[in-house]
Amino acid sequence: MYGYYRVAAAVNHTTVANPHKNAQEILALIKEAHQKEASVVVFPELTLTGYTASDLFGNQTLLQAQNEALEYILKNIESIDTVAVLGIALLEADRLYNCAVVLQRGKILGVIPKSYLPNKKEFYDKRHFVSGRDVVRTSTHLLDQEVPFGVDLLFSDSMEMTFGVEICEDLWAVTPPSNHMASNGANLLLNLSASNEIIGKHAYREELVRTQSARCMVAYVYSSSGVGESTTDTVFGGHAIIAEYGSTLVQNERFSMESHLITADVDLEKLRWLRLNESSYGDARRKKTRTVMLGRLPHISSIERTIDPTPFVPSAYADKTERCEEIVNIQAHALIKRMTHAHIQKAVIGISGGLDSTLALLSTHKAFEMMGWDSSNIIAVTMPGFGTTSRTKNNAVTLCKALGVTLKEVDITDLSLKEFDAIGHDPSEHSVTYENVQARARTSILMNMANREGGLVIGTGDLSEIALGWSTYNGDHMSMYALNSGIPKTLIRYLIEYFKSNEKIAAIIDDILNTPISPELLPHKEDEITQETEQIVGPYELHDFFLYHFIKYGARPQKIRYLAMKAFDTKYDEETITKWLRLFIKRFFTQQFKRSCMPDGPKVGTISLSPRADWKMPSDANMESWLKALE
Image (cartoon, rainbow, N blue to C red):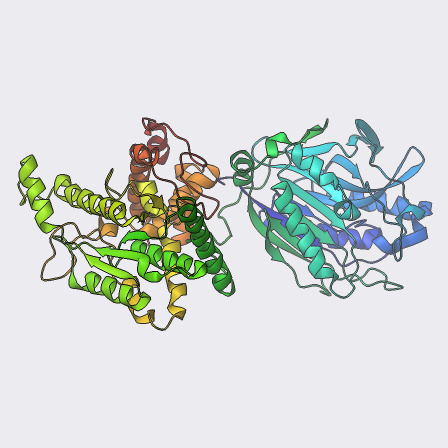
């Protein structure tokens, strides 16, 4: 469903050296995974025998019992679509290998040997096994089946899923086999492990899985031996982890006395396109691999995963201060570089009492503080017009006074009326001309004042407005440095809240945050805002959500809509989401010409629309395919 697959990590209660008893636990977990619509379930290392069987691995009875137990499992999963990956000891060419075996619908699809065998301290794999890292392009005879055997195996459903398998120490190696699997197209990695518990190891283990998922741009499913393994010298906690592209989606509680599994829905379609859109993945060297085709997989009836409605905003509140400081520092240092390079120590900002100009002013003020420059050299200009209300103007004035910047007021009413007269426009006709004359008048004033003062005009438009083209061409669309151009509207709100720690401006910021977003270009009614942006172009939280998924990995419109319905649940219905998504697509395509000539500005997050770096698009690209997909 839209590239999502449900994956599972199972930890079975182990009875060392009793494969038949272990098979009962394993089979129950495979059936549970299938009931939960998991496409694949991975088990711990040497699942059937137990990892700690030690010298019993050299005994024919144990290996015979293991193979009988494996055959029992195969007979009982003939009608099960879920792929199960178990750990076995394989005798091949008079060598014993520690292996993973891939099973589906009663058949063995392939066997993968362990490459790196730990042989230090409590681990002594080489006492029993040989490394399989040079085993490629071969097969083995197992339970009357001739099956592919080697470290060069990948498994694919011919759609979005391609997975590779490594075993325990392989992940801890300097060059894990999973690196090569990923470079050859695997977007899902599975690890069968027997990692014992010592103080602090679980945190490092989780970090290792998480970071490998980021490095390889994959989903990573990890399952380690649990309770029931021998405690002669070590204790196993049964750690299970599912990570995706640097984030841990779920991990279990270790030391469970019962067999159990965890599941997560991973977006493999997204991972494939992220590799294309924002990494050097294509430059990775490929090795020769063999791909084994999977049979039909379980279909997910609904995605059981939380979809973040505000993907640009940090989800962990504890990270707020650190994240906000980082963003403001990026803005401040970007501005410092631009001003020092130009030998300028004055900044000119149009201040409206709205969100964008507030953040631009606060970040500029921060830059001046860092450099020890006089804040009075920040020239804030309020330019009231036909739609300006006393609320926004007073907030702008109060904020400027609290920050100690120079405040100037230039009323644009007369200037606009004179231009209406010059071009023959009726002032009672509140058309786009009526609005744009005001926006361009303000920009002209700022540019000319900057020339007179020897200053730099700071642009206030944000990433969300740039995506929608919600600006006047050569009006507020233009500046000498677009300070907010890498920050979407939802993140602007988040950043401004951060500045409430300054008690002098906390109350002002509260009111600014609670003021409806408006360009204030149409006449107000009894000093109340009549022109609310989000009633015209739609909620910015929706547009930021659309923008993230559209740019980040090129998601299809129907997937964006589905995810938005999951993310916003009952807040917006499908009709409303479709309406604003359709408008987003139309505006994003038709307004590219403004982005093609936008001023310089600092990139803040992974998404930017700068035509010089992140987003290059023809201004006359046709949107029909996207609108058709949405319908």
